[in-house]
Image 1 (cartoon, rainbow, N blue to C red):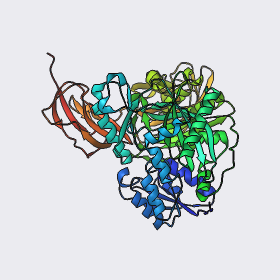
Image 2: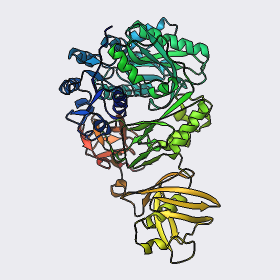
Image 3: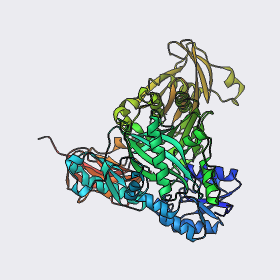
Image 4: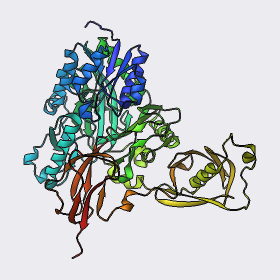
Length: 637
């Protein structure tokens, strides 16, 4: 194959993956081109690129899923290649052909290979010869109770979109409708299929990399079993606790699948491993994966650089480098795990993770997290000689991180990494089903954080007049001064001048840093004030978000009983069939479906009664706290 050097690469994606590809492209001397929707006009990936092209609109269907617009953008910017990233059009064979038809280099497998693996039936035939058992598909139209539980999956794309677990045949029609709607919105393809759902299985995958000269690498295994809503949360390489014969079987099956379609570039073959160690082939993702950094860390490779070189026609060495150590990655999301993983939007005031770990992100301080896209803020990766060290390093880095402005899953990640079931290397896909309640319990008492916030608020700035700075902080009685804060629903009133806290002595106080001695132990608190909230971080006491009292009124406090309010800004994608004012409803009945940040959320009837008002319709954009509907509860019989 003739080598064709690349010069300018357009990344047909956004956020952290675009930033990630740009980083490597720059290191290789390539000019970079970004595309962006209107909400992403000032996003980090746009600021990082050498050039950028606008895709008019906000919704993915109008922007990042418009292959025609992206090809036009590449030609207008003078790009000679397109990197699809992951998600959006990365596994769309028609888009790959469109790119190639425009005379551009497609940085990925051939359209034929994409199509072969997009067909779940064909993909399973390819690995059957390697001796790996398969989960046979189930026809939803003829499914019986003996087939339960079922897993519905979108035929196109991945990332957990369009997936539903069905445990009751009566719930199957609604689950099918929801899965198809979500798949259509995410991938432009509403095809959904069903297969048996394996309880307490492990999600294990093999990274492959192939060139056009016949070399195929199997770059070890990854375990991605910790998932929420079928989307990965924590990943690691290599997958712990697999017998060597099983690893060999998985590697051979992955290589056989790649060779069967003359694969070129990076791809991932995914398996489900049962509790008794039986592997089942799931699918092949014909793209780079979100979790590729753990493989890079273990093998000392840059997979994006290798993708680019393979696209140029270069040959891989016959064998990959030997792996060393262990790597663990955690996905930091702007979401509230304690409240149905509700995504969060707004300003990210601070995102600072201490050194010693790798951080891939599409955000910097002051950026806005939009309702239109995925809620992932960053991927944090630790690599160490042993699994125990890598897990410990990652947990410590996340615990010490300063993340201000949005509720995140940071505490959940830290507690997950420190959970005995995870530290022993035996988690499965049911981990959060069993442990979520305990992992999202309220943090210990925030009284010390409230005291630190009050002291910081009252502390004179370094450039304040001399008289203000000479007073200092004294632990003696004077006219009491107090402040009140709420934290996680609990109100704290603290007396800070003089300090009335048993066993506590103030050592230093500044607007951004307070040092307290608590029962003889020194504690340092970092404090950041915004117009609405105070963020207090401590390596010992954890991170707290405090709201000065009086706090802002919750929308729920000013509406009539039975009001259904939008729990987040989003788009109404469905209304229950026949629903109208006067309709009878039952408690827990889905009335509306909201889509926000690549997730679909059901709005349920709070009680049995009558729908007295409906203020939402399909396609409506709604803000947080908007009144969607009102249900008048029926009186007790």
